[in-house]
Figure 1: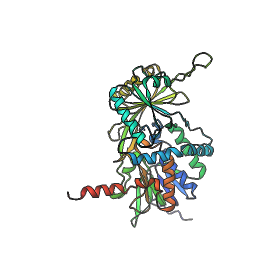
Figure 2: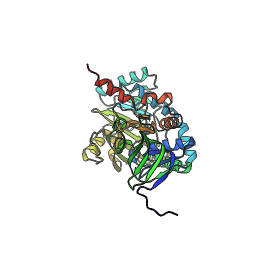
Figure 3: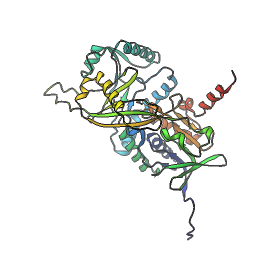
Figure 4: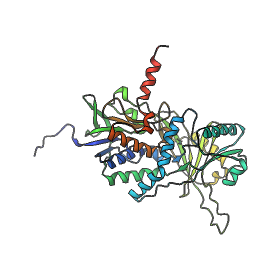
Length: 403
Ligand code: GLY
């Protein structure tokens, strides 16, 4: 047997190598291996990343924004897949994902908020979405902990939640059970041979080669060395600070009304900032989130915590009584149009699954399906075609035209 040392030890080729083990990378790897593709994934801590911070709202309707109607189609397609996706992942792993079909209530605290919500309601109705306008009194009847000053709100029974930490853990288990090889290290650089992506070299010098590489590294996706400039995804970090509190157990129905602290997600725009309170079945209350363009900073700041508590307190004054159990900041992978970049790039062998910004948890099922389709056929399915990475080349080319 030869004992000649090699400069770069090489791991046998797989059909697919996924760079990044957040929920998007994991779901891509799981779906790829289910399609019969040998698959590996490289990440120092699979299951980590933004999912460890995210609240897990599945809010296709309540997070609708003007100008994002195309993204709405993808969001709705993914929301529709959620029940079957959760059932399949639960069956594959035996793990509870904290999926809760609880609905959402978006409320207005003053006349300006109410006008803004009325407009959102009109946009939702024009888009064929189900949401119901409620008076302040009706909102408080649904959620008695709401502040007496609530002026009205939108009840959206179709916007649910999942626990992203449980989702990430289950996807790691599902990948392992299905035969995805997990390399627990950093990818340092993409290897490109004769104008084709062929794998990565890791920080410990190992070469991982593959027929196709999927770059799914969240906010870090634009930073992988070796990716040619013209296919490097235009993804930037958007910081979100999030708090976790512990709700009291509801008193037994025999002793009192037995009402939970909150029974659905409650959200509002307070002085222009989004605030949401997501109550989990296990008693955790997630309060989020700031949206800050500060590069790679993940510091939890006194100002961030103060603003979230101040705004959440205006909505639900009783939160100041609750134990504050965790503060954390994560980085959303923002893209120029707030929508993901999915599928093949102009570099043969390199695909993207990144840029999910505020919707990574919601878009997990449809992303896994779309990437598996692209990896096996070379094309994106209809629903994902507007999100091809090449759309930004066109935009750049148009802006470069002389006026
Ligand atoms: N989707 C919630 C957030 O990004 O804060």
